[in-house]
Length: 311
Ligand SMILES: Nc1ncnc2c1ncn2[C@@H]1O[C@H](COP(=O)(O)OP(=O)(O)OP(=O)(O)O)[C@@H](O)[C@H]1O
Ligand SMILES: [Mg+2]
Image (cartoon, rainbow, N blue to C red; front, top):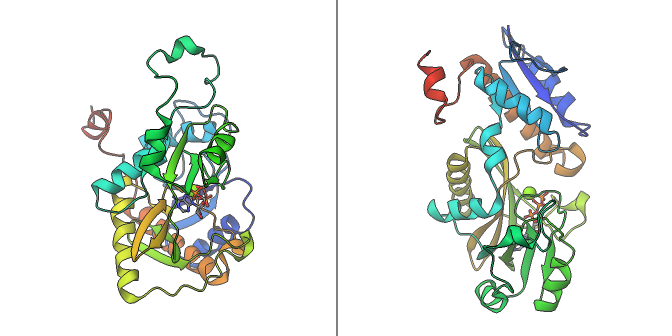
């Protein structure tokens, strides 16, 4: 029997619905359940063949457990090694390399010293920063946001340097990026599953949370094809099997705004019924595909060659 395990936190609707959907497919030899774990020893053999991770960004114990699971060949969605290494500034650099437009973006040193450091720890940093140059590069309006964040926490729209400094003063020791604000005509949020199943959803970020997926934009056929192509390029380069990607369209050009969402919102109440059904169906199908393919240790790490050559 191949087992698909779900690891999740505060979500209410998606995890139980996904387990039920997978089991309702009645694929011979495949079943899904919620993961149960305690302390993990080096001798443990994890029983799961596939794990969907919806929460390790908040629970470092889970991230460590998932790296160990991957070493044993468990198909972990998303890749716990890459997720730990990724950030939104690097993401933008990758987007440029793979030919997807992104807003002009600056990586900023933190406002405060990180915990347990002093100005002596910062000897490589110039002070004051070359603010004028940075502002001229990005322009206003601009968005100040964490280089690794979610849930709109510490996301500030700034229309001028004063608003920027007021916002930056509130960011403490969080590493931030400052990004050209794209004043858009259309906005899309796209689900990408298994680097091949894409759902493009008109999205209106200026609406209150529960109405964001109620938007009046209708993408043309060309726009759909272009967004699908951009999504596949980005998730392939970034090795995400479960992600959402956002694009703001200005003057006919879609700019990738946020595509580091490895545990994207999938609650029925926020994504709306039709999108929820698509995510359920597609995630169920993809996780079953992985289960049937079976265990596989990741490639591309120095240690993989030892494991995969059987040494
Ligand atoms: N450069 C930008 N230009 C225009 N709008 C932006 C830009 N950056 C962020 N935004 C707006 O701010 C919102 C939140 O930004 P972002 O998605 O980067 O943060 P997040 O915390 O990861 O949010 P989420 O949890 O929705 O993924 C976006 O949905 C978008 O509406
Ligand atoms: Mg995000």
